[in-house]
Image (cartoon, rainbow, N blue to C red; front, side, top):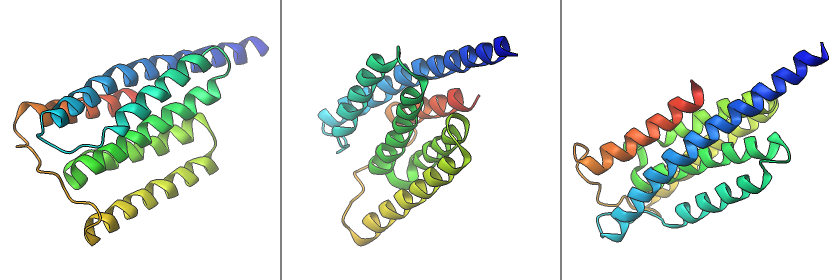
Length: 168
């Protein structure tokens, strides 16, 4: 029976590593294109998301050799960060809600059901916070590009691919 648990731990570690690789690669493309769009003056996306994302990926690289727990929590943090970035970029026209739901699923898979409930509450509070910020005028929607132009289709497509790769 001990060999079985070792095999399961190896498979779990392998799954986390594969998911993280997909998320890191696709996320860099989506955030990079958003950053380029921002530099061209076509939107006012918040560049700190890109910096925080790169910092998290760097920290994951350092902790990959130790334990899977910090790596799985960092993966949840990245998905939560993508949700916030999406809300900031396009509010309800973005995939932010989907990223927050995937964060809850990851918490249930990689941690405990009680932590999934905490993450669900945090996700709901994040949604309510953005709703209040947009509703009160503290945040204003940037001029959104046409939803049928390449950039938003690519960015949303990358986001959809990220969430599919995590849940699949």
